[in-house]
Length: 151
Image 1 (tube, rainbow, N blue to C red):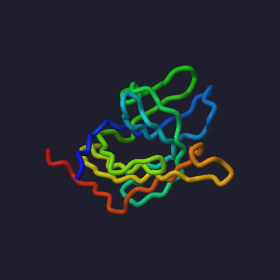
Image 2 (tube, helix red, strand yellow; image 1 turned 120 degrees about the horizontal axis):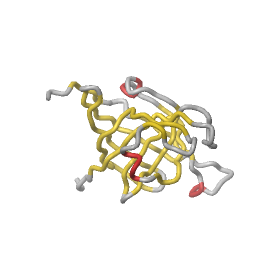
Image 3 (tube, rainbow, N blue to C red; image 1 turned 30 degrees about the vertical axis):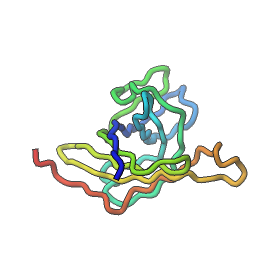
Image 4 (cartoon, one colour; image 1 turned 90 degrees about the horizontal axis):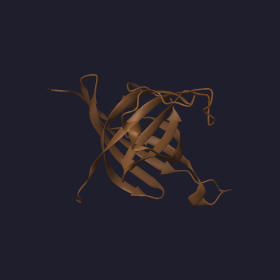
């Protein structure tokens, strides 16, 4: 088995402000540390509790975000809204290519340790060139393990 490097991730609840153009709906931004930036996906809202059950969500891959978003909470400036943390920790890439991003998320939330497997799969639009499609599907693994911290 190849070495798996752990990087940081954060899932932020984003409440859009007046100047935010992509959507006016509250949503989640899934951000993964990759070589000095954050690979970012956006999905509809789902709570940490809901992640303990298998989920299938539409995801949109966004442009890379600044690494500072690992720490930013509250107003993000420029009337683009505010963010609050849903989940953070480290992740390991289990498989990745241009059509797949399979990761294992680990961390602690509210004195509960968690491990969640997430499959991001590119959805190809027949009308577009496959490499240009930014639409993805996110499926959380049915064997999610959420367990109490023993610290």
